[in-house]
Image (cartoon, rainbow, N blue to C red; front, top):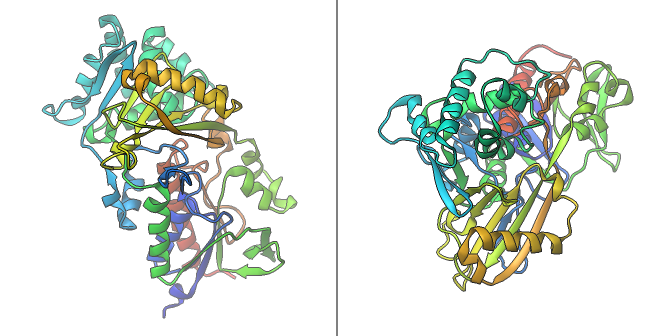
Length: 455
């Protein structure tokens, strides 16, 4: 066995960042141990079996776009690509006041121009609004580096956008993508979002989704890959602190006092949890202290089971309603029926859910049962057989102005210590793509370190 193959890495955190780092390092010949404090993998993208229906339920509805190249490659690397559906072009119904408009790319126009019909035929906007929208897209296409102190809504208003285009188009995309309202996200994050997806090749704006539960999609598959390369994935294992010897990180200490040693350690954790593992003398340094200022935003998931189908499309966006985005889980997971009785499982994803995070289950049920009946007429006469909510109070980090100042790189000034997590410096907002990119970047940094001479 080569010297390189004998070197080892500990990855603390079994979310997508930690799993992608573990898979990459395992495939490169290093011995990997992944430690996850919870009894399941996936981090903030996991699923659980609902005890009443027996159905696997995602903690929140996760979709991705064709621009998420590293996330899609990760799924291929762990042999999970067959468990997602990825259209070739954007095709999304948007419902407002009982009428449906489609954001739909052309199937016959080549290249990036294929997305133009999606904008020009979007009839939830007036003719004037569509022309404004097109002008805004042109300005985004050729935008330089925007001020880090400006919000996206301020930038849009400076470039010809008004209340109509902002509420009926721009925030329709920004709110679910960046998990925050357009009035508070940074101009740089908003511009990056549209440049990456809608202004690229048509497949980059297409919305893909899993057909199995999230834990089965990535967690179980990644564990199999890591173990097949001789690695180890340990769940329900908490980490108390780092072990530092002569300024070098050499492992981790468990709450029991036992230590696990390795040639390198990757902390694939949320920013606050990462800071908590650092000794005080490190946490307050100029390098690490900015991470203390990473802010988070909540997502609330609402799951309803109806006794009959109430919607036809896999998903739909809804304007002028608290529904935001509604997902036909039964159809997305390609079940012949929602349950044995032919019902339908619907998930509502509430992004930037400040308004909803403190509501009781009864309050959420009352609000969203009524809203579903308003928007989907079949829901008015259907019976709800099961209702659950999932609240993720720290679902994503916020991309407000100057938030980039708080994101850290994967390589730290402490020998043997590396960072991963969607909040680290990946160039992407808080997405599954950012998480995977961070894991890949951390793995590359670890490989460079372990391939060089070090104490």
